[in-house]
Every structure is written in structure tokens, then in C-alpha cells.
Amino acid sequence: MPLVPCRACGHTVDTSAQACPGCGATDPGRKISRQQRELRSLLVQLTVALLLFGGGAWYLWHEYMPTIKAALVKQNQG
Ligand SMILES: [Zn+2]
Image (tube, rainbow, N blue to C red; front, side, top):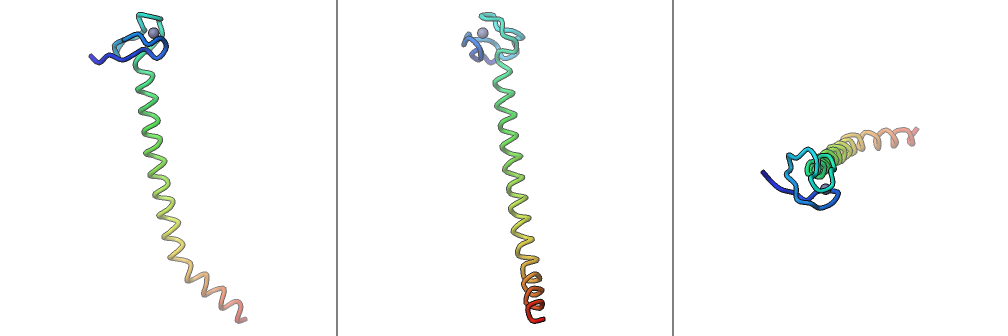
């Protein structure tokens, strides 16, 4: 059973405790770890999204830029 400091008062409580024995705060240990887990998954999702978006933009740029350039040149030549 891991012990963690209460988020409200710092009293050492079990992570599975429903309420802090020191101050009575609910989920004294779980709240912190859940927030950290959500923050971590958010960062992972953000990184994946950025990689996908960046990779997609890079691919589209190199895939369609010659076509766009050719079309513009053709247009300028009349
Ligand atoms: Zn407490």
C-alpha cells in the first residue's frame, strides 16, 4: 500500500484512502496521480498530433508543390 502526502494538508495517507484522516479531504492521494496521468496522456496525444500534422504537411508540400509550380508557370505563359 503506497503512502502519499495529502494534497490538502500534507498528512501521510494511503493512496486507496477515501478521505484524509487529517483534514477529511476526499481522495487525498488519487487526485494528484490522476491529474498527472491525464497531463501525461495529454502531452503524448499532443506530441502524436504534432508529428502527424507536421509529417502530413511536409508530405503534402513536397507532393503538390511541383504541380502547383507547373500550373503557375503554365498560367503565366498564357
Ligand atoms: Zn489532509
